[in-house]
Image 1 (spheres, rainbow, N blue to C red):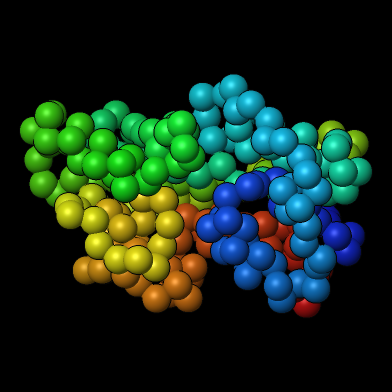
Image 2 (spheres, rainbow, N blue to C red):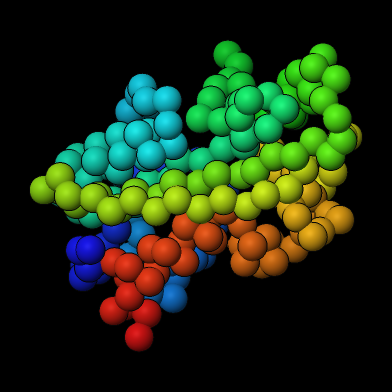
Length: 206
C-alpha cells in the first residue's frame, strides 16, 4: 500500500457537508486541504453503478487536474426493502432544476417503502467509499458502512442528506439529531477513514 507523504491534498467534492466532515477528520494530520470547488474544477460525470467506480472517477479527475494527490468520497443510503436503492443514485434522487432537495428525496424513499408495504424495522445502511488517487494514476480504496433503520417523519437539523431519517444500530436518535462529534465517531465515513489512517496515513498519525 502506498504511503501518503505530501503536505497538500485535494478533496474531490463540492458537497459542503462532506467537505466539513472530511476536513475535520484530516485536521490532526497537518495536511493543507484544498477542495475541488476552491480550484474551480467542474464535477466529472459519475458514470459507474458502484460507489467504488464513482469514487475513482472523482479522485483521478481531481488528481490529474491539480497535479496533487486527491481524496474522493462516494457515499449514499442503501435501503434493503428497496433492493439497495437509492444507493449510488442517492444524490440523483435529490436533484431538482434548482439544486438538491433532500427533504424531497427522503419523502421519495418513504413513499417507496410505503408502496412496497415494507415490514418494520425498515433496515438500511449508509455506505462510504474513499479513494485516494495520485497524479500518476495509482489509487487506494477504502469502504465503510454503518447499519441502521429508516424512520418517519425525518428528525433533526444537525446532519445533511438523508441523515434525518436514519437511526444507526444501537441508537434512538437519527443522524440528524445526534451530536456531530458522536456521529463522526460511528459513521460510515469514519469507518472508511479509520482504514485510510491505518494505511496511507499511518506514518502521519505518529
